[in-house]
Amino acid sequence: MRISLFTALAITLCYTVTPSQAAAPAAVPALVYPDSGQPLHILPLAERTLPTITAQRWATVSTKGLQLEGPAFDREGNLLLVEVLSGKIFKLGPDGSSKVLVEQNMRGSAGIAIHKDGRLFVAGLGNYRDTGNLTTYHPDGRADRQIIPPERGMLPDDIVFDSHGGLYFTDFRGGSTNPEGGVYYIAPESDKIIPVLSKMALPNGIALSPDGKVLWVTEFATGLLHRVDLEGPGRVAPFGALVAYHFSGPSPDSMRADQDGNLYVAQYGQGRVLVFNPNGIPIGQILIPGREDGHFLRSTSMALKPGTREIYLVANDGEQGRGAAVFRAVGFTSALPLFSHQAP
Image (cartoon, rainbow, N blue to C red; front, side, top):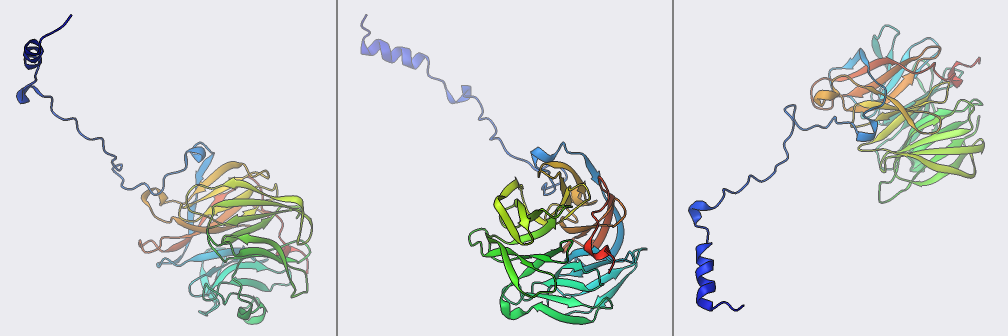
């Protein structure tokens, strides 16, 4: 059936909507922060249902946001830790009282491992570009010698002894787009540096399994946890290196293992420690109090107190006013026996 042009125009005019009849435009959907503000403390979805505890504040090291790192217990139960920017080394007694063991210097102290003879092996970042070092100190804080001098151009960051006195360390160089860092090994009573892993982007934390056959390494710039099977000191087994976990957000820092082989990894920028089983599967987490308000998100490291299940976590509040402190919690099982506590 044909409709004339006049008829079609008349029908169109009958159904034209006037401006007064038009519906009001709908509001444009908008994202809104919760009442507490920007949620920097939010947990990744996959980790929200993990068994979770909140640590207790144990000791205040400074009212300033010092970049604390590398805690380690000596045989007398004192907790030693470093401050990266000043190079200082602090010594905290069993009651939490603190004193400066090594005064300000240019070594950029970043990690501590204690030898069974009492010497402190301290990794340093130097100028954070090319003057890193590995320096030993006497128990009273007197400098002993440099195993890795600044002239080597490395940036030793975290260190761990094996049961024989050999030393693994991370070389904190590179970045996500220029993986120049690596992991190295120094045999007992030797200064020879043996490459273990290469082409890494800011390798940071390092730990060994209880039997010394698995090496764990965090990669700060890419958010990776590496699990490395060893066939001997400083030697990676065939097909032994793999990525066990991909972290969300910033950024895996230092770590420690317990006697069951569980791994405790500090999350810098998140105010918490994530715990893994020996397969690299998350099984729990420890939160720093204040993180829910955006404080103490700079959680860097922890120490497991020998002979106990106690974990001492270090964190600072940056420029937000709550200083730098040590927090305490209880882990799944006892601390891994350390080389520092073997009979001399």
